[in-house]
Amino acid sequence: MNDVKNTHPVYTIKDFNLWYGETQALKNISLEIPEKQVTAIIGPSGCGKSTFIKTLNRMVELIPSVKMEGSIHYKNEDIFKPNAKVESLRTEVGMVFQKPNPFPKSIYDNIAYGPRIHGIKDKKTLDEVVEKSLKGAALWEEVKDRLNENAFGLSGGQQQRLCIARAMAVEPEVILMDEPTSALDPLSTAKVEELIHELKNDYSIIIVTHNMQQAARISDKTAFFLNGEVIEFDATEKMYSNPHDKRTDDYISGKFG
Ligand SMILES: Nc1ncnc2c1ncn2[C@@H]1O[C@H](COP(=O)(O)OP(=O)(O)OP(=O)(O)O)[C@@H](O)[C@H]1O
Ligand SMILES: [Mg+2]
Image (cartoon, rainbow, N blue to C red):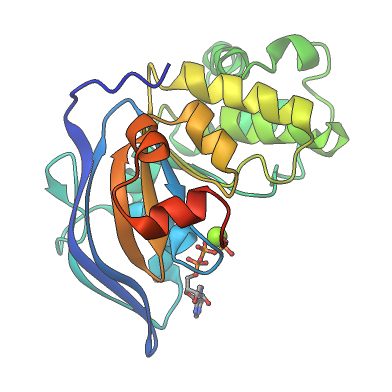
């Protein structure tokens, strides 16, 4: 586990700044996020973790007061260039939120939703996508006999795996996860962590977590944010065993946060 391979960056962030009105939430962020690895974002409440990952699929701009400066490249493409296609970026970059948010639809229709929007109508193709996505999210065995039941009938942990399956159904390259296990019990958390570990063979995963042990267990690299700045970004093992900055050391050893 935690083997840090040398891969191409999936994101290259340079001198990036973001404000909500007058309040600066991200300050001079420069990072290269590796492809097909798990990158953890840690740091105390309000330090800019959610803002940062919502910038990566340009969701943050849905908030009108947002102003930005600097550059973000996704696979060598400037995501803010004037003719950049936001919709195709959001197709390639899926997102899973803190609270499971299935649609008020059947399990099947939750997964088929994205592919249908992309024009897939053939029942057999949709059946295959649904099965493959649910298998990929380690949920198939638990739900294969109740695909037409409402997703709200699933447990919280099952709903979160459904949301991961839904994100995977449109075959993204990247999955952003904002504290995906904070609403889950330990067993469901363990299942989602196991899943994340398997997913990194196929996806680049960026996960926000408040749980230090979780970041240490599942991530290859970790970025420590504090007051909108990246204090340290390194291989997770290195950061946890021998942090460079005293503030990182204090945070991961639980002195604040
Ligand atoms: N929509 C918004 N409008 C104005 N300010 C905002 C908005 N969203 C976030 N902020 C501010 O930006 C800063 C960073 O918030 P953000 O949600 O990114 O933090 P976070 O690290 O994800 O925190 P948490 O761990 O509590 O989820 C905070 O000061 C927050 O108050
Ligand atoms: Mg947050």
